[in-house]
Image (tube, rainbow, N blue to C red):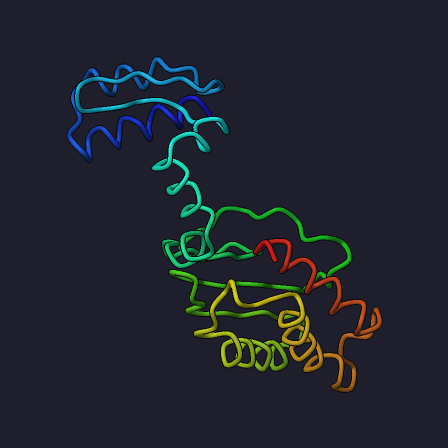
Length: 192
């Protein structure tokens, strides 16, 4: 963790062309305690709860960083995927055993807007394609942080129905259980 912090400090110093004394001072700080060092035109340090409430500029920035607009609408493009994809071939942790083993989720978003989405639960190729198309239709251009638990549950219900309503479809567990478990998994991943 400390190495990551040092890299962020170094990149900040490079990007904003701060002097070596600022970078060196910041690198020496104990990141586990509130501590400040300052020069004529710079301040380096860590902020604790006391500073957040005592310094109006810090409190204002802290509130802004906790806002929905900052947390969601300022996000860079990212992809959440439960399986390796071309852009990120790393292995993924196993899905919870409560989900159908064939479950695949891939959501690409930028600035809080879903750009692409695919959620499937079927092993049948035709059904998977229907679920992918349905996912893309319903989720593309949705605002991620406006999707509450009820919205996700309704969406997941419509995806799972494509598989469970067809003859020979997903009948290993009751549909409602699969919907509940899958919606809970997605909500947990997106902080809903």
